[in-house]
Image (cartoon, rainbow, N blue to C red):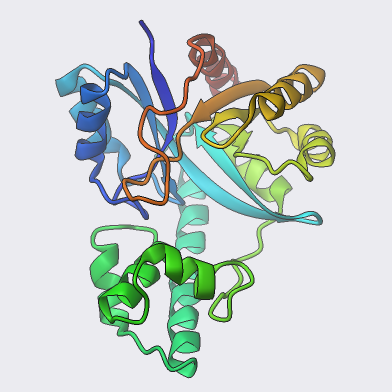
Length: 276
């Protein structure tokens, strides 16, 4: 029986478990295919795929990437891109470098709020991660005793309207989609928000969007039905996953039921993009 989770994070970005540990947990929970989708990096692929071969779990290489639209911030999931593509890696490096500056800006704002943390501690919590993110800042805040939990850090300081928030590097959807397609990848709108879904889908489909993430931990039956209909209207594939990070603020690995046919259609689209 095919069991899937196509949205997972590891210590290559802001997850808690190493790529090997993610694969091992997937095996323990009876999953047959997973995708590692860390933020703005392919650095965990090799380790995860090696663990997958050893444990008998199919591992697809993916990543998550941000973009900005007239309707606000969105996230994309990418599958099947060529990790050796120089233009893709240059693009991801630019985004990761911007993440470092963004995180340093948050540390500065926190100091101005009377909540100092050391940049070295943020780097400590990032560990081997190629992509520094807000959870690393949040963990440093907890360690310093300024907040009781990472959730409190986000709720009061690091959320999009929080006093320590720093805006992301603004990259437009057309640029992201073009670079992904040039690298042979498939690009999917991740966990689209209800109020944005219909206008965004039409706009992004015209730009070359490949799919929608329909099966997600907080999507109701009504939301899934809406997304399935939008995918049908715009000839988009559908995907799904838990958005697992290994912490208490995200869903558990394998907790989202994803139909097996999702994998077949995703692989078909990857083959089409790879031969384009």
